[in-house]
Length: 612
Image (cartoon, rainbow, N blue to C red):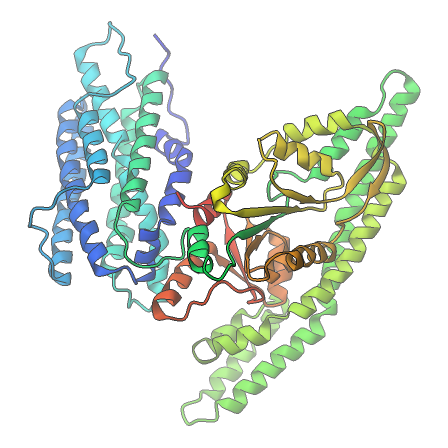
């Protein structure tokens, strides 16, 4: 018999949730959830959803009863009873929804196929009819029943956890809408502390029930959890929408642009720290270290010197980069302060009305010393948020100033590359070693899945361009091609070889932000100017129709924030665009808006562009 697993600090429920991250994010970006979040979901669609959800909740209540019968622990039984009671209260809430919005859920409705898939799956699990379970002959029936309780709860946790997750994500949008959201009551329920506590309770119950189970049993629970999460996502996708939505982007774009012959999407992506977990320079440096001969004392000393040279170059680069960045920001400070003065003068001129709080403004402006230190416009934007948000955004976003500053950074990058070339540290690298390293590169989760999906589906009509400062394009080509991705255009620097061995020289084509911008605009001149573009690099991010940065890139945020760039979570941006569409103001995604969207992972990008 397989040895039972001991519980760890992370907990079974948390591990399962992390492994189902993709489905949770895909659910968040479904047209139904985006429309609900925006507040413009058609009432008939919401009515249909509530009627279908009633079938879910009734099934949940019965599944809890079956799980309680199988549980062999009094505390577990008590917890299941409490969770069942919360489901009954949720059913009552649905009844209040029906009264408030004027429809009768007591009328018999037929569950759709997605609803039936989940309810049938849950009933089968709670009844012990689970595919793939191989029970050992020496296990007692009593222990088998306890396992069924654990399996049942593992098929129910995803629903609770997903709704708690969605509730929290949507709550922010209710707050910024001054509590006037038409579906505020629904969002308030799932973001409430009571529901969040119920979600934590069922996760704790899952952890408790899984303590004495075997590896095989835990694998079954993981499969049940994943299956339940996928069925939840399918449930949201099955809701009938008779309204336009901005997601998935490819569907929206191709639907709206096909008649005007602007069909197709061009996607630009960086490589280092966007596709990869670590910078490619470090990889090439390690290959150089490994390529150094080690056969005798002289060669050993040579290797030692080589490593010292590499460490010195790396240290100097980091130090000089920070110095260049700080100098770049300081040099732009005069123009920045002048912008502040212009805005303040404009406010004083316009607000010559009886109720204008001049003294209050003076007190707030005294805080500008802190504002200078932080080098952002937050305090000032707060002061005039209601009446002049659009004017302030226009004045505070200083694209030309940013471009001038990054030209300084470009000069630094070119000098740094020349130091590397002159050191000859990249001389003697074997092309096969570089390709092998590319195949083994540690990549961001789901990055290559996304590119594989969009480049191998001709119906999507997507063009992909990778723009990178990487010294060696062969490393990037190998990384992509090893994952079956061949249909993309690469714009990067190249090693110069003699045969299969590098000379240490670099054919420089993309060394700096300005080089990237020139490559970006050059490509666009060859494309239809109104195609949608997405990129992950700062000047290009701002030029693109939709600029997306992955992860918490502090350097980009600091520099961008200094020049008035706003960093907005992508989901919030999508919901705002959906709201604009309903109000008749949405005319598409536009570049040079001063907004860069942020995501935590490639799953978000996939969810937004491609969908489920």
